[in-house]
Length: 172
Image (cartoon, rainbow, N blue to C red; front, side, top):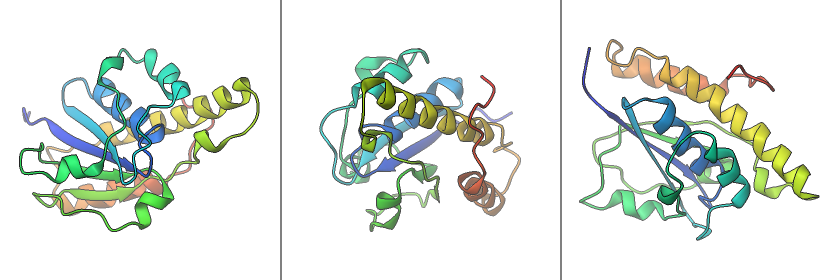
């Protein structure tokens, strides 16, 4: 079995909710096989507190959470990414920076829970729903036998995960 640790970058426009939750899920669920990062094309500058609530249960260090620009990951000293995944439709349509190493890319669209209006309970429910949807796709991604697949097959599977139907209540 390969000892390679795969780097995954999740992109969204604001980097305050979906990409942040995906970063925490991949890093914790990947159990050392994956290190995830997140960034935004126009970072909000703060992590949404409802996203933080969802992440708390994962054991991911909350001190690591910050809204940041994707420019950080295009710098010469940035970690080289194996995978780039956009999680919002706006970021998927933007022209991304050059990513060294030609990482595989895919789009996994999720509704924006930060756009939900209403009570805190309505917002909390929207974040929980999207968190569970991200978790379901992350489980599919992490189950891929990456060390045995060739690059084109992985790319195909990565894109297929983004197009997969999302269960409302995936198993924990």
